Length: 207
Image (cartoon, rainbow, N blue to C red; front, side, top):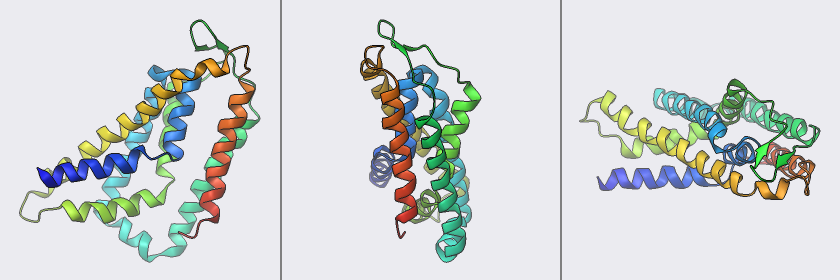
């Protein structure tokens, strides 16, 4: 139980730190509200499940050993973040009803929000490497592999969903800054610039 609590704490801290997925959760919380941002969180969770599964299968070791493959995935992920940032930067200003905090220009769909949450998370190869370093610390070779897999991955998916929803709920609390008196164009510039900065940061980082 002590090791399990350490595992939960480690995963929570790693997940709650602001990054592309959490910034996306905040963005969708502001634009669509927490209820609709659940689709984004589900997409992110599915990506985390896939990353965790393939890291257990050994791809993390392959990525660590093969720099060309790692950097290919890394730059593809950075390009996607920059694309999202530019798309948001040049999109039409968001208008929010000050009384209901409802986005009056919401033209998104469940699938669109889900796919954005999924692709932003799955495009980060560092997550696979992180899981590959994390899981061996908590694996017991005397226990059923399936039971251990479920014991590691299910809590991870719950924490990933919760952390993104925390950011989405935070986004709903600051929608007053993007009402008709303070146009949503400010939101487009701030959040679009954040995604572009994150993408550029990934490109210039050495690891």
